[in-house]
Image (cartoon, rainbow, N blue to C red):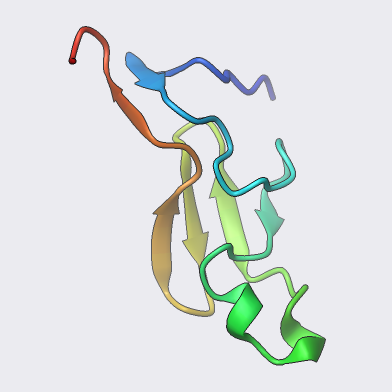
Length: 76
């Protein structure tokens, strides 16, 4: 899988991988809830990442999050 770090479907990426996750991996920790979990669960893989769409989903806190913020081309 080729991960594009400048553009997603016509949108310009402002900050690629804003959470510092392992690029290209499809599963990993949740940047939103993993720090608040019990020590033995902090590194549990509770999230799925979709790098091509720029979204992640946590199966623990049931939240969808952006892997990188982006904006429309030509928008100021």
